[in-house]
Length: 189
Ligand code: HEC
Image 1 (tube, helix red, strand yellow):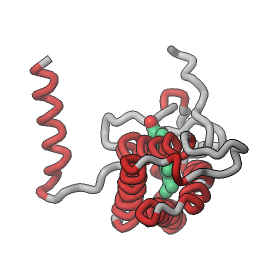
Image 2: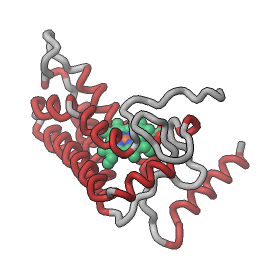
Image 3: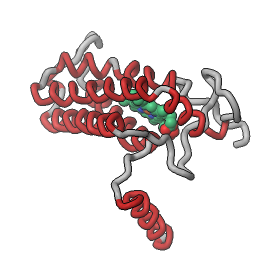
């Protein structure tokens, strides 16, 4: 146990120190550690604040703590998306880092809906980095809107932006990951 922890600490240290510069986090780390949990926080808070008709949110149903959590989640999304958008080159996954569904991927040209390997996703991004950056900037803007709306307790904007998250996320997943659904469960398991 301690040995494993020690190895993990060592691995993390190596990752962080990479050539003496702080390296840009991978796409995969950003998705699993930042985009996914922060978006979940925003959705959880907004879904608790629905009005009786279910077509809008009620500001009074959001507690002071939850406004702060909303602001922090928006800021975390914005900052990570900006960091990636400003990096000269982004890396999908570090060696050994697994991406969802890659076990089901096959070599060669990937068609839409095929499960993708990190190499295939990397090739899609490298073929059109400007479009990838555009999607990152859109996500950064969405995060920034949540942050600013939370400061103003502007429930209308929180509702609008959080209900569009699906498109903000899938708008990039579709062209670069090739799916907006989790890929099929690997047959080998
Ligand atoms: C700029 C493009 C882009 C945007 C915007 C984006 N993603 Fe992703 N996302 C990717 C790519 C590329 C992958 C495939 C590589 C991978 O799995 O890490 C991915 C994969 C994922 C995965 C699977 C991670 C895994 O275990 O392999 C999750 C979860 C995810 N994204 C969540 C989100 C959420 C939530 C949002 C919106 C708030 C979002 N993403 C927005 C590019 C994006």
